[in-house]
Amino acid sequence: MKYRVLGKTSLKISEIGFGGWAIGGNWGDQNENDSIDALHKALDLGVNFIDTAAGYGNGKSEQIIARVLKERKENVYVATKIPPTEGVWPPSPYCLSEERYPESYLRKNLEERLKFLNTDCIDLVQLHTWTRAWNKNPKPLEILQKFKKEGKIKYVGISTPEHDQNCVIDLMRSGLLDAAQVIYNIFDQEPAAELLPVANETNVGIIVRVVFDEGALTGKFTAETKFQEDDFRNGYFAGDRLSRTIKKVNEIKNEIKDSGLTLPQVAIKFALAHPAVSTVIPGIRNTRQAELNTAVSDLPGLSEELLKKLQKYNWRKAIWYGGK
Image 1 (cartoon, rainbow, N blue to C red):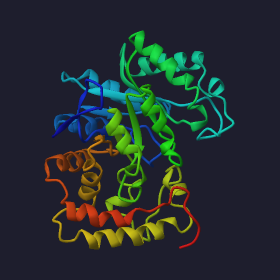
Image 2 (image 1 turned 90 degrees about the vertical axis):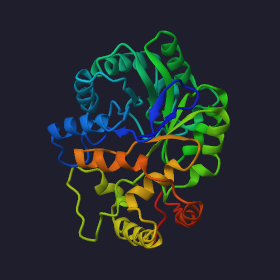
Image 3 (image 1 turned 180 degrees about the horizontal axis):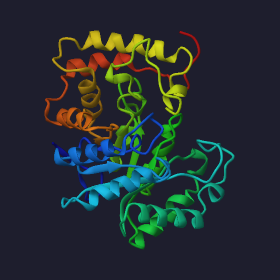
Image 4 (image 1 turned 30 degrees about the vertical axis):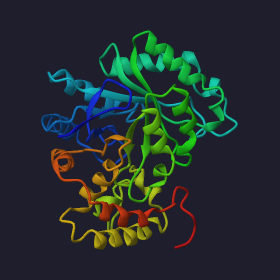
């Protein structure tokens, strides 16, 4: 396992992290023992960065992580997220930050995160979404900076809203962010235009989520693929979205057929190729996934030729433009 420093922080983290959404729920059936075994296996294989959130099973993911870490001796860094108060997601331009992220709410929610993670101080706390309407007066981030001074959190971040990831660029330049969690993959390459270069300039750590495009870039989906009723991918791949995605995935498979790498390996290496990226956090549900994902770190990087070829698969589908 290779390690990278998370931006301007002092955290030297594994370039393959553990994404903790699926072990909390919303991805179909998940056996808790499988979740525990997956975490232990990932840690055994060198992972030392885990990402979770309050919303992953209403704290279930955090509590499972805390149980596992209680049994471990090595130093493991944990990032979690605080969602806004109830309302539209992501927040609209008309939402007020003092209503969606009031200080009393942030403090109460943070205390719950500390309790569920069984710790006195969390390595990284991220706001789970944002709107650029708050950039001129980013009060919620200032409140988190206050918690930082109180010793309850070490570093502050934002998990970007998927339809406006660039909203964090000004915040990176403001110095209020230590890290940003972004969607960046073979299909969604927009961050390479400005967000990632600015992260490099400002030394803001980048955590890449959705590296497999919710499973599509593992190459395992077919026209017969069905998701369980409680699996959020039912909505993500609604209508003709799955068939359109499979068509493009097959094109990528053909592109990489002589690389000696599998599609999931290429997907992870593509994200790690950008110098601004500190870690990718694929979801890991079982020991096999832990083994496969962590092994990618020790593989050679993608050639400049292949990276160039993959650029043409940039797919501006953030709002799933209509038609095939």
